[in-house]
Amino acid sequence: MTENQIVINEGSKISNQKTYDTVRGYIVAAQKQVNAAVNSAMVAAYWNIGKQIYEACGESERAEYGKQLLQYLADKLTTEFGKGFTVRNLQMMRQFHLKFPNANALRSELSWTHYRSLMRVEDENARKFYLEEAVKCSWSSRQLDRQINSFYYQRILASKDKDSVAAEIDTLEPQPEYEKIIKDPYVLEFLDLPVNEHFYESDLEQALIDHLQKFLLELGRGYSFVARQKHFNVDGRHFYIDLVFYNYILKCFVLIDLKIGDLTHQDIGQMQMYVNYYTRQLMNEGDNPPIGIVLCADKSDTLVEYTLPEDNRQIFAAKYLPYMPTKDELRRELNLEEFEKKEE
Image (cartoon, rainbow, N blue to C red; front, top):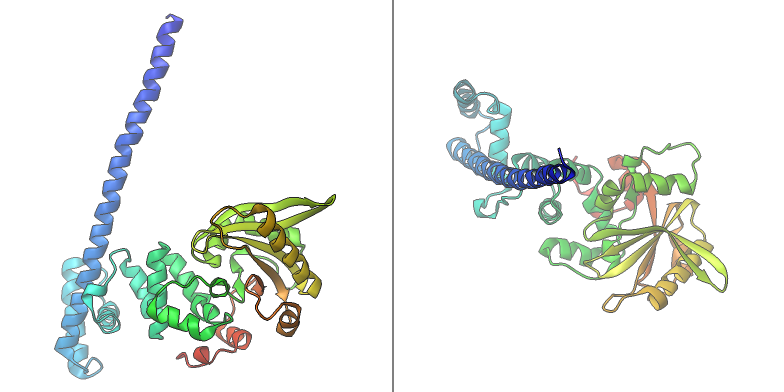
């Protein structure tokens, strides 16, 4: 066999692989479309089943006739179609119709599993918020569950301007103000950090990098990772910013400094210097001014208030929790009237 023939054979292998990859891509895309169509059709079917049950039972779901009808349907449907049509699931379909009365407003991007999670959210504004965010951010059902369980909506409401944030959530109109994308606290349970043991800021930083996708989910919409330990030099002195992101919705850099202890006014001053440097040296044409977040284990809101100017819109301090908070812990942390009104 000549060298020429070997080259030709290798070239054929590469060509064959490219053809295979292209063909495979068509099949995978078609399968995704089929799965999406099936999901959408089943969601619509479950809504119609729920509507039919509601109309047949009226308000008497817990009355004797309602129980008999649900059991009758469950037995017949399970015999013909298999699992998925238990009395409990039929009750859930009825609830689906009640929680989402407008069939035309159902989103094809969301699966039945998404809607089951959304039905657990009693507050209507919160439910609308989670639905829209799940669609915009392409959350999986597991990611949606995580955001609901970590009280994402309540933490957004805990930002500086509660009234306007609540109005934004109600109207679902995007608002560009920086403070409305800052959550406090940030929940970092996915890092599996020791709660009552000492660790270093470098450990926290490495854990965030190791779980970057989950951290981006916690940060919210529009974030992309830029750098870690971003170095710059001022008059021969070296500085390092722990994490740098870019938010394409706000069109600005987001600088994050990590502190494992209590926040000090020196920490805030250091972040102010970082933000000033980025503003004067590294902003691109068309960018909005950068914002800085000092992410700390604990902080005094009074200290933050007196350290920053009243018109501050660029420097923020937020706590992080290395665990998933309970409802009571979050109630104490946020002190939200809206949260107090949530049904148990």
